[in-house]
Length: 477
Image (cartoon, rainbow, N blue to C red; front, top):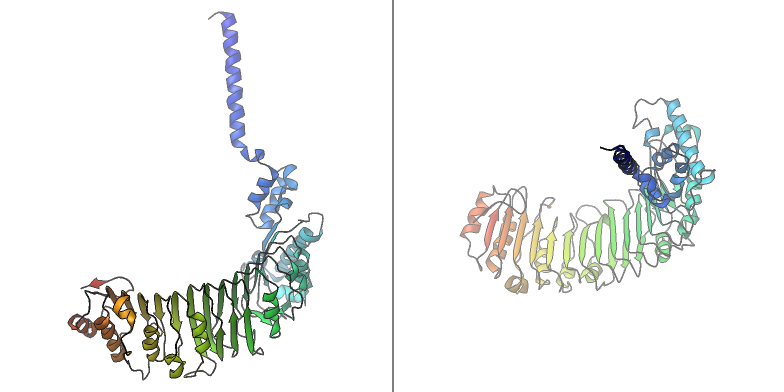
């Protein structure tokens, strides 16, 4: 090859090598080509202390973590309960470092502002109690982030020593752009509300309160009245949240989902006025009564309720039935609680009800009444996992419910310990009167006597009978 051509070939080869090296460098460091906003968004998925460590990468990264506008912190690494290698002195030092870090983020030269999302899971241990007999620093943190820029606030606290409940600052309830608010005490009631006179949560859509104590009856009413667009409310108050409150009001023009869970301790009266309510999930085993206004858009209702008078108590449910009569799906359990026969005789029509699940029930007369007043019922489930044994008898409804003639298609009986004689009568009645019944599932499979009776019993339709040790499966005939 002539020298001139060889020189040109070397130049071209060098250029291609440089281009390949440039492409390799770009592939190896694509992240440097991202904007600060994109990098900050990536870091927002990390706990803040991990995002903070990226500041050592380069001069550019020194401030990127402060652009996240999100604070996500957990102090488990500072607690001996979760790290047995820690001594008390080392735990105190770690907690002090953790507190100083948050103070620097909120008040120091590394301040993150504005804070749009604040998530803090704090375990208050004996080391805190030794050094900080009270918790003003936590209240200061909450107060510092409670601005109109805040969109999400998620705070949970647990404790392993005696400590007074925290009173949330009023500024938290004046964040006009806050969309999600969650307050949770892990092992006992550690958060309390005084009288809330000024609430301006104008954008709040999701509210979650777990083991939070209200000091007086109007507190929740005032809280909800200041949330004009609230859509979902979840409350799990714990054992000592509302002992002195006789009435509990859930009044909201925008609420779509209401969930309440407590198994004992309230002994009060519940009032629900939520015209846009779609889903109601209510677990309360100790109450005096329940009143609910009609919601035209109601889809599903789960009621697991009991009387405040303990075993074999009575509870008035007439106003409750009126309120839930538009439901499409209903799960019902009353445990040891009786319902008055006069109320069951005057049930409203459940015209939209297509799915019904009955759990523990003290009186089979309720079963007779509810299917009599559910003309479009298609699917019926008896879940006897916690069924109450007692002197119950099956009384067939008169006249024959219209749902048995034209709509009921599937029946499932879940009874791990087998069926009693009156329950067998109920099952045989449904099989005999179900004109359009397509499938009946019975659990457990080992109930030989029931299997024989079902196979020998006359049927009003070509119903498929399935025996199973597990729901929705098994052997058929």
